[in-house]
Length: 212
Length: 214
Image (cartoon, rainbow over all chains, first blue to last red):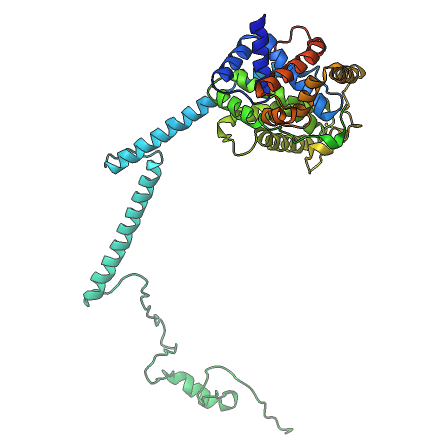
């Protein structure tokens, strides 16, 4: 009985943050083992809340609240496990760095992406080199003319002697003697072009009649 | 019954040390240590959230989430701030996140919200009560308050004074020993006896919910 009272006094001091070392460990052990000690802890804090606030404190749902929270916490990893996880991750990172420094190459997770890019770059370089080489070879050999993008001049075909052929040379008019004779005979129907050359077709016509 | 102006700091001296030690234990894998922190702060956290949300079920959900988040992040608590300050920020952030999510849900009525950005717990209006509080719960809370104050007034003067100096004025055992001119061990004993005298009457009122394990 006296032990229980001593332990409850420890719980009271624990609530005030006044315990250290052995007494602290004993108080926590007592609270861990005894449900009544936890109820006492609750009662002490409810009393404190009432005294501090000077008003009613609703505490009838506290046990249900804790029970529900306890069930939720059972699904959680303990907080200490988080630190262990962090330590494990850190250790893994350190070992990765060590392996890198030691020249032991291990394929990265995104290695395939960089491999693809490396091959694409290589293909581009090869294409550019090929084009450059062709340009250099063609440019250095005067006997070979570049074939691409060259327009072959097409000679106009002369199918009849009556057509005019225009060239860069001084113009030579091919005249039809029969037409010239005809035009001379019918001078009033013949016209001259701006170039003072017969146009070969009726430019204008006048009619000379007696009335004029 | 005490006056509002006499309210002590949120964490009386010594409590911060106690909390830090409990956190240390919880991080070391002692879940009961974390539960002691929950029992200590759950009413204060629920009252804080109750200022932001009317629906008592929502208040409880947010309080649950607050403690779960605190548990997950417990190893990050370094003791630079008081544990309650740290928990307070988690509670406010959790409540804001909940409210933002619920506001997107048009089926939740606007009356469920009463977001107050200042988050100042001390400005909580006592006349306000949560919508789901039943007359029974209100009555039970009042009964507890009456019993606590009645028993306090019947205590011997040295016990009553020791408890008031500790709980209301927030003095350390050393300071109380100086004020009462007695050894620290006597202070500890007087505070314990005063608490026990009150809690003997209060425990049956807290233990009404049969089947609930502490």
